Length: 195
Image (cartoon, rainbow, N blue to C red):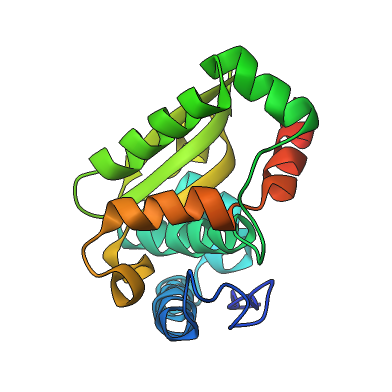
């Protein structure tokens, strides 16, 4: 069964004014869809066609890996944002952030630095790694599962994620993502599954 483009977990206008419907038309409707279509073309008639997306990611490289990982990364990213998101995490997630970063502000500083410091295209992540929360970044399609880490949160810093709304102001996009968009319930659920 071919891989399919998942629906967005919110209405296309739900993230306005922070992420526009126009951005989502391109980012989800064109970029994400292209990765799905490319992946299906690359694995048609091959053993990977009957694997899960995660199995394809862990067993492949080159074009198959790049497209499979980007399907996974984008699907994960859509769940990291929501209408009326942002603010402060609570409960076990907040405690883990305080424990491993010293404070929420220290986490924000480190996550922002990773997202700003990712040269070119890629992702910044909050991950669970060997019992601790860590901030990391990956280039292009790379992702935490390839490094034995569990993804909890990501921000897409490929230009197509923000250029329509923020032009080249990646810093403003990152600031807005953390303040207004992060789905902390999703992040907390990921942590609960990981520990």
